[in-house]
Structure formats: C-alpha cells, structure tokens
Amino acid sequence: MPGTKRVFVKTFGCQMNVYDSERMSESLVPYGFTETDRIEEADVIILNTCHIREKAAEKVYSELGRLRHIKDVRRQNGKNTVITVAGCVAQAEGAEILARAPVVDLVIGPQSYHRLPDLVFRAQSESRRLVDTNFPEQDKFTKLPDRKVKSAPPTGAARAASAFLTVQEGCDKFCTFCVVPYTRGVEYSRPVADLVDEARELISRGVREITLLGQNVNAYHGVGPDGRDWSLARLIRALGEVEGLQRLRYTTSHPKDMSDDLIAAHRDEPKLMPYLHLPFQAGADRILAAMNRKHTAADYRRLIDKIRSARPDIALSTDVIVGFPGETEGEFLETLRLVEDIGFAQAFSFKYSPRPGTPAAKMEEQLPDAIKSERLQRLQHLLASQTSRFNDSCIGRIIPVLFERLGRHAGQIVGRSPYLQPVHATGARDLLGHIIPVEISGAGPNSLLGVIRAA
Ligand code: 5AD
Ligand code: SF4
Image (cartoon, rainbow, N blue to C red; front, top):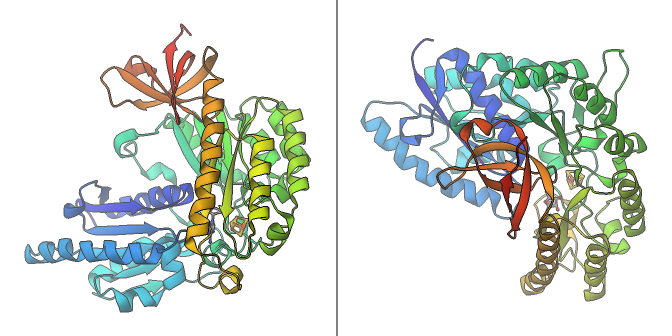
C-alpha cells in the first residue's frame, strides 16, 4: 500500500493515552501513512478518548459532530475518511458509538490496537463499520510493530528528550469510584527484555529521560530474563544500567504497592528522579474504606515517612477526590489535615463524579454539586499554596535541568527540574537534550525561571 496517506490523532486524558496514540500512528507507517497535524488532510482520524472525567462520552460525541463536517467536505472532494474512536470511551461504549454517531467507521478498545492497520484497511476497502473491544489479548505491544519503523522524530519534537514507556496496563484494585478496571481490564506487565529493547531504541533516537507508565505501575511484575517475575524496582535498576539513559521516572502508583525495594531504589538509584506521584484520594478512614482503597490515612503517613527517610528531598504529588458519597464536613477536614501535614509539591484534585457501572455511582448520599465545589475550592487553595511554597524554596538553588523544547519567547528554552517543575531559561537551541545546571532566579505558581550556569 504505497503512497502518502495521512493519519491525525487527537489525544484526551492521561499519559498512557499519549503513549498509545504514538504507537497507533507508528503502526500505520508501514502501510504508507504519515502523521499530520492538519485534520482536514487526514485519511484516518483517530480520537483517543479518556473516560475518567464526567461527561467524557458527551465530549466525544460533540467532537464527532465537528468531524462530520470535515468528512462531508472531504467526500465532496472525492476523498474517503476513516473516523476511529479509540481509548477508554471506545471500550466502555462499544457498539453504542456506531449507533449514536453515524460518522464513526471504527471503534477500537485499548487491547486491540495491534489490529488497527487491519481494521483501517477493512473499513476503507470494504466500507464496513467495525467494532473491536475484545478484552483478553495480552501483550498488545509486542504485536505492534517495532518502534524502529518511525524514521522521523515525533511531530514538533515537543519532548523528544523525554519519552513515555508503558510497562504495565490495567488495574485489579477496583477503587469503587474508578472505571479503569472496567475499561483497561486486568493487570498485565510487559516482559523486562522487551522494555530494555524499547528503552535502547528510544535512547538511540535522542531520548534522555524515560517515564515508565502504568495505571498501577508499582504493581509491575513482568517476567525477567531469568524467567522469574521482576518488581518495578528491579526493572528500574536494569534500565538504570542502559547506557545513555540519564533520568528515570514512573507513574502512577498505589500506596499498597509501594514496596521496600522500590523505596530503596529512591535512595540508591541515581537516575531515578526525586519525584513521586502517590494518590491518597481521601483523608478519612471511613471514606477510604468505602472507596476500597485498602489503606488508612495512618498507613499513608507512615509510608511517606519511610520514603522521606530514604530520599529526604523527594517531591510528592498526589490525587485527591472531594465529595465522595456520604463525605461529611468533618471527613473533608481530615483530607485537608492530611494535605497540611504531608506537604505536596504538586497535586491533582477532583470533585467526585459518578461513573456509570462503578459501585460508588450506586451509593446513596450522593452530595450536591455546591458542596463538592465549595470543598474543592478550599482544597485547591491549600494545594496551590503548597506548590508555591515548594517552588519558592527552589529560588537561589542550582538545579540540573533537562532541556526539552524551545520556549514561547525568542531565545528561551524550557526543561524540567528533577522535581518535574518546568524551568524557563535563556539559552541556545543546541542545549536541548542536555542536562545543564541552572540557578533558579524566580518562581511562578507552576514553573521556575533560571539562569544557565556553565556546565
Ligand atoms: N470522580 C472523581 N475523580 C476520579 N478519579 C478517578 N475516578 C474519579 C471519579 N469517578 C481521579 C482519581 C484518580 C485520578 C486519575 O482521577 O483521583 O487518581
Ligand atoms: Fe482506578 Fe487507580 Fe484505583 Fe486502579 S488504583 S481502581 S486505576 S484509582
């Protein structure tokens, strides 16, 4: 199938989807496709959707309404367009999408991405509308073509120095508010050897930092070269030995799976960055139990103490939900107290929103939106002050920054501190892809300003 067909991918939601989107468009390259950022010229349009937020499906349908126009105009010009819905909304809604949105040709769940080229081909040649949301496929990644197929750097080379690598997918935790176990299925860990190969490939393309991804990444237990299951800590140590790799991160973790060897890796593995995203969701034990989190607030505090003893400068990040069914004002205050006591460098906070099919959606005592909004505002006020305090504490320090992209202003380059803060500095373009000491001269709510010091 030679020629120059174009694929356009629009990604919603988490980093897992960013990774999947890259892999989906790469998988079409051997079939004569190149990626485009101009939707009107795309022969295949993929919406890679996220189901975690409220009204996620509605947003997809309204996006599809816009695509109908593009498809009509292309048809008038004699061009065919395959419109594909991928990701968690595809998994959750399945054939319902075809029924509700006639513009859609293909619905594909996250476990079926290796079949994308075949499905696209069939949709084009047989003019059929297809759904593939089957579950039990295991390593979809090994069935996707090697990352080598891609000759050009990702469009825009936005974070070419830094890349994501999915090491684990799915989740068996069944937090009662969450759709992930239903949309992404049971936990699956990729084999160590495949991950080391893929890391080498990324490094050969100029990547210096890899973020290991998984819905429950610290539950990683992939098969090692010795035939036994390796933990995330062992995987991190193995990747730490890969030449050319300078920084490692992982996200997102569950407190229950924060094992001693992983904590020790934060002390011993110099390439593992001092940053940890560890959601606690709520501060009251009754709510944590209703959420099926399998840990108490005291467990979380003890865990943080242990992590901080291993790596005192670690920057902590978290996810918090307010207004879970039945949450009292007193229980919300326990959430605020936990935040106050721990001190986060970064956090993501949400109003509880019922997700169809999850146990919490059926619970009585759903709270009115006004209460959730008011609590969210108080929480976000506290979290913002903590982020500012953390950013301010960096002023005057010299911090190694991995520069990743050009800034918006002429002569400006932007990178990341070890603590994941964006750092803006004036510097030459050829510093991109390098780690350079920067003296921090200013701090904003979400980023730092610095002056480059001689390396
Ligand atoms: N309502 C609100 N927040 C949610 N999250 C997941 N499901 C819900 C929901 N139903 C949040 C959790 C999770 C993050 C990715 O999204 O805090 O850690
Ligand atoms: Fe969802 Fe995370 Fe809970 Fe798994 S651990 S069910 S992904 S919130």
